[in-house]
Amino acid sequence: MRDFSELSEREVLALAIGSEEEDGRIYSDIAEGLRADYPASAHVFTEMAAEESEHRRRLLDLYREKFGEHIPLVRRQDVRGFVRHRPVWQLQPLRLDAVRDLAAAMEFENARFYRRAASLSQDVSIRRLLGDLAEAEVEHEHIAERLRAESLPSRADEDETARRSLVLRFIQPGLAGLMDGSVSTLAPVFAAAFATGDSWDAFRVGMAASLGAGISMGFAEALSDNGSLTGRGAPWLRGAVCGVMTTLGGIGHTLPFLIPHFLTATLVAILVVVAELAVISWIRWKYMDTPPFSAALQVGFGGALVFATGILIGSS
Image 1 (cartoon, rainbow, N blue to C red):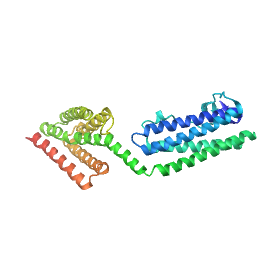
Image 2 (image 1 turned 90 degrees about the horizontal axis):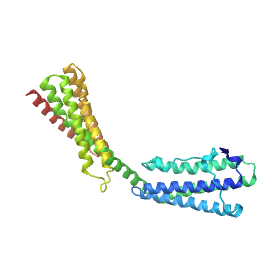
Image 3 (image 1 turned 45 degrees about the vertical axis):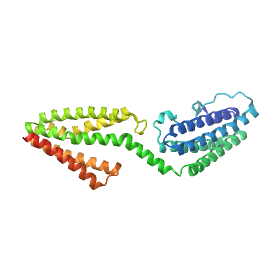
Image 4 (image 1 turned 45 degrees about the horizontal axis):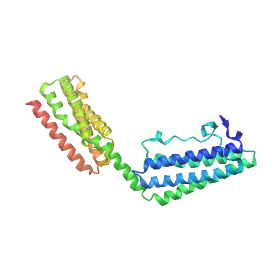
């Protein structure tokens, strides 16, 4: 690798041309990735890509005027200390905050680099060129801020869209699985416990019920909706989330029955059930806009009914 100060004026221009092209492609990739869900942000990045294209055109005109048509291949990774940015495909799935921070960092770092390189250069023409590039990046940063102000009054709407997407793709199937695993397995686990009075038997029934419910709920969720119209995401991902959470919900109050002492195991399992129902109530309040008292009452009442059913059947 070579130091930036070792580059000739021709090489600096070639490097700047390549960098502007790369930045423009990054912004275009971001815009394409955001277009479906966040059109306002996509518009901002499309405009920023257009600005990078204009900077590249100006640099090309200057290069042709001074050095002709052939542009040597000088890349960022060939120059020590030059700014590097992760490609967009490594940022998938795109998050609004991540790509906005990336854009701000690109403009700030490029301007700082050009400014610092200009201050270290002993060649007047190179210093002037680097200074011009630094000013262009600062100008672009200001354009980006103006575009955000003009085109992103809907950022709150886009953030709400991102929240809804999180709820639809992860929270909702996960909550459905957790509720099913925590509540529906109560009856077989405690029925087996009170019917046999043996912790190991209760544990085996609980594991079978939890794993079976997880598999069943996972397939049911995956096959219920392909996500193309509802925006709920990939069916296999929702099914996996639902299945795993269903299994965890059942295993939570099954594991205490590994305790050999039956009474102790039962008491610990009951405490785990209370904790599970509290977590479910909190998630319903936090993400599903259910009033906290109503969420606790609904979940607690349903859990109590299933729990009582298991005890009555196991004790009969």
